[in-house]
Length: 142
Image (cartoon, rainbow, N blue to C red; front, side, top):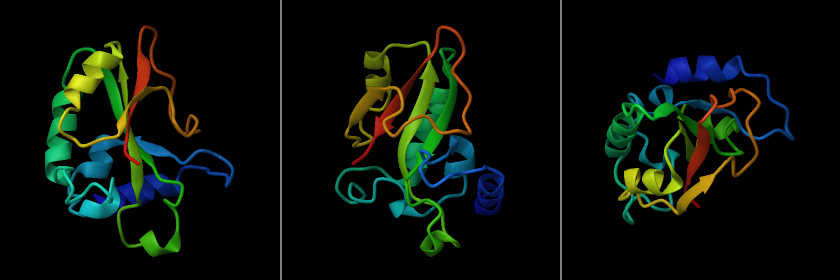
Protein backbone atom coordinates (compact mmCIF):
# COMPACT_ATOMS: atom_id res chain seq x y z
CA UNK A 1 0.00 0.00 0.00
CA UNK A 2 2.97 2.33 0.38
CA UNK A 3 3.11 2.71 -3.41
CA UNK A 4 -0.59 3.63 -3.51
CA UNK A 5 -0.15 6.05 -0.62
CA UNK A 6 2.80 7.74 -2.28
CA UNK A 7 0.84 7.97 -5.55
CA UNK A 8 -2.12 9.58 -3.78
CA UNK A 9 0.14 12.05 -1.99
CA UNK A 10 1.87 12.99 -5.26
CA UNK A 11 -1.50 14.15 -6.61
CA UNK A 12 -2.21 16.49 -3.71
CA UNK A 13 -1.18 20.08 -4.37
CA UNK A 14 0.58 21.37 -1.27
CA UNK A 15 2.02 24.69 -0.25
CA UNK A 16 4.67 24.99 2.44
CA UNK A 17 2.47 27.19 4.63
CA UNK A 18 -0.57 24.89 4.34
CA UNK A 19 -1.57 22.29 6.91
CA UNK A 20 -0.24 18.82 6.05
CA UNK A 21 -2.55 16.59 4.01
CA UNK A 22 -4.74 13.83 5.40
CA UNK A 23 -5.32 10.44 3.79
CA UNK A 24 -7.86 7.68 4.16
CA UNK A 25 -6.98 5.53 7.16
CA UNK A 26 -7.04 2.32 5.09
CA UNK A 27 -4.49 3.75 2.68
CA UNK A 28 -2.24 4.62 5.61
CA UNK A 29 -2.61 1.57 7.85
CA UNK A 30 -3.17 -1.37 5.49
CA UNK A 31 0.10 -3.22 5.06
CA UNK A 32 1.93 -0.69 7.22
CA UNK A 33 4.37 -2.33 9.65
CA UNK A 34 6.44 0.78 10.41
CA UNK A 35 5.70 1.15 14.10
CA UNK A 36 7.35 4.53 14.46
CA UNK A 37 5.37 6.24 11.68
CA UNK A 38 2.70 7.44 14.11
CA UNK A 39 3.13 8.41 17.76
CA UNK A 40 6.74 7.19 17.86
CA UNK A 41 7.23 8.57 21.37
CA UNK A 42 4.44 6.32 22.64
CA UNK A 43 5.53 3.17 20.78
CA UNK A 44 6.92 0.84 23.43
CA UNK A 45 5.46 3.11 26.11
CA UNK A 46 1.84 1.96 25.92
CA UNK A 47 0.76 2.67 22.35
CA UNK A 48 -0.45 -0.54 20.72
CA UNK A 49 0.97 -1.84 17.46
CA UNK A 50 0.03 -0.42 14.08
CA UNK A 51 -1.98 -3.60 13.43
CA UNK A 52 -4.01 -3.12 16.62
CA UNK A 53 -4.56 0.56 15.80
CA UNK A 54 -5.73 -0.34 12.30
CA UNK A 55 -8.15 -2.94 13.66
CA UNK A 56 -9.55 -0.40 16.13
CA UNK A 57 -10.08 2.22 13.42
CA UNK A 58 -11.75 -0.40 11.23
CA UNK A 59 -14.18 -1.09 14.09
CA UNK A 60 -14.83 2.62 14.54
CA UNK A 61 -15.31 3.14 10.78
CA UNK A 62 -17.97 0.42 10.72
CA UNK A 63 -20.21 2.40 13.10
CA UNK A 64 -23.28 3.90 11.47
CA UNK A 65 -22.54 7.31 13.00
CA UNK A 66 -19.07 7.48 11.42
CA UNK A 67 -18.78 9.05 7.98
CA UNK A 68 -15.02 8.67 7.38
CA UNK A 69 -11.64 8.38 9.06
CA UNK A 70 -8.53 10.14 7.84
CA UNK A 71 -4.93 10.10 9.02
CA UNK A 72 -3.40 13.55 9.39
CA UNK A 73 0.23 13.63 8.37
CA UNK A 74 3.01 15.34 10.29
CA UNK A 75 4.46 18.62 8.99
CA UNK A 76 7.57 16.71 7.85
CA UNK A 77 5.56 14.21 5.81
CA UNK A 78 7.34 15.03 2.53
CA UNK A 79 10.89 15.18 3.91
CA UNK A 80 13.35 13.25 1.73
CA UNK A 81 14.24 10.95 4.63
CA UNK A 82 10.78 9.38 4.31
CA UNK A 83 10.88 8.83 0.54
CA UNK A 84 10.99 5.03 0.92
CA UNK A 85 8.93 4.83 4.09
CA UNK A 86 5.48 5.66 5.36
CA UNK A 87 5.32 9.38 6.00
CA UNK A 88 5.00 10.35 9.65
CA UNK A 89 1.50 10.92 10.95
CA UNK A 90 0.38 12.94 13.91
CA UNK A 91 -3.34 12.45 14.35
CA UNK A 92 -6.42 10.61 13.14
CA UNK A 93 -9.56 12.53 12.18
CA UNK A 94 -12.96 10.94 12.69
CA UNK A 95 -15.97 12.46 10.91
CA UNK A 96 -18.96 11.50 13.02
CA UNK A 97 -22.35 12.50 14.34
CA UNK A 98 -21.38 11.02 17.74
CA UNK A 99 -20.24 13.07 20.71
CA UNK A 100 -16.69 13.77 21.80
CA UNK A 101 -17.27 11.52 24.83
CA UNK A 102 -18.25 8.68 22.49
CA UNK A 103 -15.10 9.16 20.41
CA UNK A 104 -12.99 9.22 23.56
CA UNK A 105 -14.46 5.86 24.57
CA UNK A 106 -13.83 4.41 21.12
CA UNK A 107 -10.11 5.26 21.26
CA UNK A 108 -9.45 4.17 24.83
CA UNK A 109 -6.25 2.16 25.02
CA UNK A 110 -4.59 3.79 22.01
CA UNK A 111 -2.39 5.81 24.38
CA UNK A 112 -3.32 9.07 22.69
CA UNK A 113 -2.92 12.51 24.22
CA UNK A 114 -6.58 13.28 23.78
CA UNK A 115 -9.42 14.00 21.41
CA UNK A 116 -10.17 17.51 20.19
CA UNK A 117 -13.01 18.83 18.10
CA UNK A 118 -11.79 20.15 14.77
CA UNK A 119 -8.41 20.30 13.10
CA UNK A 120 -5.47 20.80 15.50
CA UNK A 121 -3.14 21.97 12.71
CA UNK A 122 -5.73 23.58 10.46
CA UNK A 123 -7.96 21.91 7.88
CA UNK A 124 -5.93 20.18 5.16
CA UNK A 125 -6.70 21.45 1.67
CA UNK A 126 -7.34 17.96 0.33
CA UNK A 127 -10.17 16.94 2.65
CA UNK A 128 -13.91 17.49 2.25
CA UNK A 129 -16.19 19.09 4.79
CA UNK A 130 -18.11 16.69 7.00
CA UNK A 131 -21.73 16.10 6.05
CA UNK A 132 -24.48 18.02 7.78
CA UNK A 133 -24.88 16.78 11.34
CA UNK A 134 -21.30 15.49 11.48
CA UNK A 135 -18.22 16.99 13.12
CA UNK A 136 -14.52 16.24 12.96
CA UNK A 137 -12.86 14.89 16.09
CA UNK A 138 -9.10 14.52 16.02
CA UNK A 139 -7.29 11.85 17.98
CA UNK A 140 -3.94 13.43 18.85
CA UNK A 141 -0.53 12.19 19.84
CA UNK A 142 2.27 14.53 20.99
